[in-house]
Image (cartoon, rainbow, N blue to C red; front, side):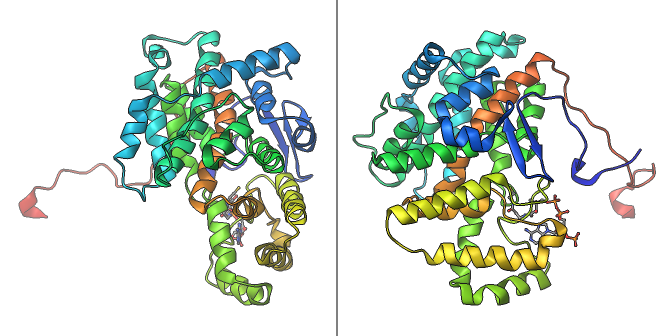
Length: 380
Ligand code: COA
């Protein structure tokens, strides 16, 4: 038996949802390139595509959006629970807690405990969860800001509604920017959190538990938490002049550079390229310059010189945090926004997993103590 650390390169399933060519730096959702989808689609349509495998026609999209928007209202008891949490609670923890609790308020989400869900029930659960998760993230933001009064859901498209719920912003350019961010983060083959979702789904756990587990996995800085770590790093560096010294010191100490490197890509992540352009466009729109962007570009340049031969280039998290910051979103929300978006991919994999389920149960290579006799307390 050969052990492969981190299961690098080990296929965990057959999938039809997304595909990456890490050498070429390309990503496809259901066969459509990420550039094409980001340019032409919306997050609502992308969810339909990920869940169903095909782009919707006009009627299908209208129906899908109607179903998503009518399931947005969050149960008042969940809002009441949020109001009892410490104000500095991590939004990722609050999201985990509230998604786990959803199953208590939507009995249909737990019926699977008695057996396998039908495909129709799986899709219906997916719609419920994707509808609720944006409201849950926004409701905590409003609770945190002490602005829950007057908080309301709308029947706008997903990104427009999410931004409105978060901070009341209705600027069309900001909505378009958030919409593209949601699309870009929606799905990415078998990354750590998606694998977590698949493993949890394979036990026939209810879909809220599947998403709760995936959120926990996403939260770490080696995965979705990196977007926040990048912004802290860029702020610590301060200006382009300090970049070389900072990077060299981190590399000397064997510390990673946040937002750099990827298990699959050996070139710049195609999503990072799009996010960088979006950031430049946003700054142009606002006619401002950004010391963060200038510092990040210098980090990219220095990392290319130091790490390029190892295939270490910017990943999706490198520019997204800086973009969110420019949009006026506080850093604690960067990873929860990623979670809202990636819920689309997690749910698509949840549905796919159940079509041909086999519980995940890998093996191990034991290298612990040989069998031995129990030693009594007096003899230790
Ligand atoms: N900064 C500096 N060096 C890095 C690096 C980074 N961000 N990412 C990888 N490397 C180096 C490793 O030190 C290793 O070097 P070595 O072969 O000389 O020992 C080599 O590149 C391979 O890295 P490895 O850790 O084996 O890659 P991985 O596939 O296991 O890890 C990540 C992938 C994403 C976890 C890793 O690149 C990382 O920690 N990146 C920073 C965190 C981040 O941005 N995560 C978000 C991912 S979307």
